[in-house]
Length: 245
Image (cartoon, one colour):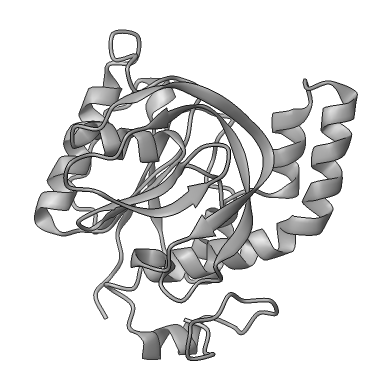
């Protein structure tokens, strides 16, 4: 098994790896987290996998955040070489923009929303629908070389694939602490609604994140090795054949 070298692009202090960090620690996967908000360069010298986290800025704000252009170049380089990329929220929009998709303001989504899976790409064998946390006010149009993997009722494009890269408009990495921090300034009624929904959906969200992470790393971790290093979990999302991946 080849050694996984994960590079993470972190846009802001308030949007860390979340549950992805828990999984990487469990699987002994080391990560090189590039804190772009501290003026670090978006570099990927020897990475085998690239994880791009979310942020409050727009992909169109390159004058204010010049590293956004570097991130798009890194995404294109990774896809050209066939290396896995996973973009979350802003990361998904960066993926779309890197290959010619338009990103623009649209309906805001804050809280838990039902997502419909089309059953392809990284979502092959997933349930037809699941719940995920959202915090965004922009959306993307599908680039010429992309395909949609998930859709939503309020915002249509929820996940896309371009070659070896997958982008998720939603946040599978959420933890209870992250959610509390993100919603603390919302009106009390909205905070209460989201908190109640979190009690219902967070455990399944962690199972979702676990399965997505396993598939993200699958190019380097064989299914046989996964069974050795990943302990069975309850409520794990399963494939069509009934086995967890």
